[in-house]
Length: 273
DNA sequence: CGGTGGACCTGCTGGC
DNA sequence: TGCCAGCAGGTCCACC
Image 1 (spheres, chains in turn red, yellow, orange):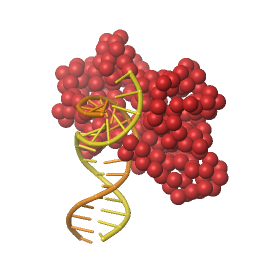
Image 2: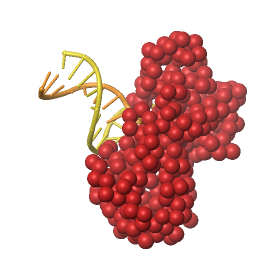
Image 3: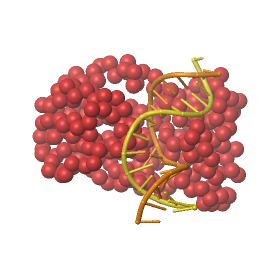
Image 4: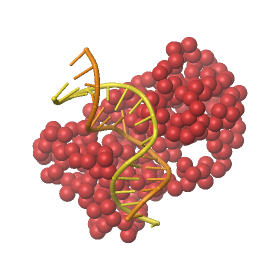
């Protein structure tokens, strides 16, 4: 479900509702997600107040009035939403934070690829989850030259390169197809020997597609919602992903689906080279 | 070191 | 109707 725009959408929707709220109690109902849940650390957040919410890559960082940060990753199927305190417990509701205003912030994740961690705030960058992450695509340091520099000496297809979180974070399987479509670059184009002008187009495309998707509240293909349960709208703007056999919006050639690294890729065989 | 392919987990859909 | 294969938005790790 969640790539950078969806995670940012959750962040923006939760921030005004959570800022200043305190966690009254925490329920942990599963022993593990991708990793074992640290029950003691999670229960230890009770009594603390939310100071802010940041995002790094696809991680939500919830800062509290304690030297620890609550870190949430939605994986493939995670949802992090506010509900009424007495709302019935959802299937796969693995962690629930009861707030001082009576509402409940819950983490639901059927596939359990997500993460709920408690980490020391002043050492987040050194934590193994963050230490090797690449550039933020909406940050100032991200541009064609930065991509080109990171591509030096590398090989392999462009799709895999743009999805490599050690290069640039936040770009998942939907938005990589969209960015390649915008940049008119074939997903199998080799990273090696790519011209500077192409890197500039790619960086611009990554940035613009992510920014546009954030502005539309993310992509709701199935069941993604923000922290208040609202669906996103960017799915109507998708030009490649999920559009196999539909005409390309530029040249009307049918969009093609291929498989790379066991994941679907969608592209226009005529205008992406 | 870098690239590739499989593993992790559950649920839904479409074809037979 | 029932069953099964295939697919799904992410990340990590073993293996070349």
